[in-house]
Image (cartoon, rainbow, N blue to C red; front, side):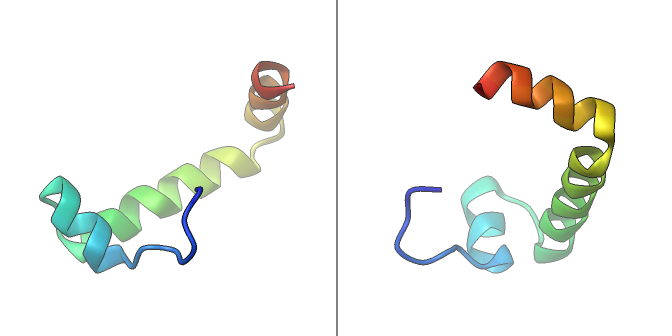
Length: 48
């Protein structure tokens, strides 16, 4: 967010001391949660 180019999984992992695979797992879990209708609606209420 707010960057000219997205960071790679490797770059994110380096910043947070995680492996590329762990970053991928976290990303996939977050995307699954966002796909759930009730979570999406709750998030929408907070961001307007």
